[in-house]
Image 1 (tube, rainbow, N blue to C red):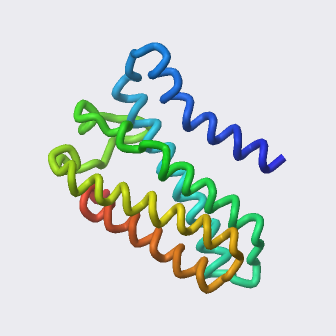
Image 2 (cartoon, rainbow, N blue to C red):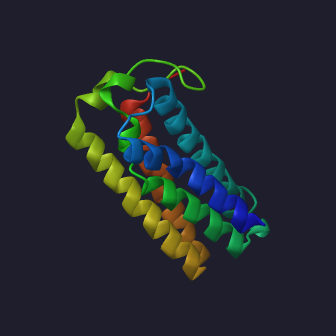
Length: 159
């Protein structure tokens, strides 16, 4: 059952890409903002699950759950998130008003470095989770968290 829910969520996140590619029609600006906000919320949910099992409540560690959360994070990181940030979506509202800084759209090389770091660290987190070594998983979880925080500090407006 959990696997089916995970697959459905992956399909839901990937669907906008498939639809846009098939129809060569780009989703509306508000939809793109919703998609990226949804992807970030889904990633945050999985990061909080990992934080609970690895940091806050380590006695609750469940290897299968850690692998699933790590796989979800890696899937999102590898899903071409940058395509959800066209320059036309610098302002607007998805589920809520976008908080992306204007510099995100002018510092492509720096943004790409953040993106590649997230992909690398997320993939290594999944690898560590599959290995089951708590020390390695915690270390890599911290690397993913720092990668997210670094990008948000550079390109996300505060509330």
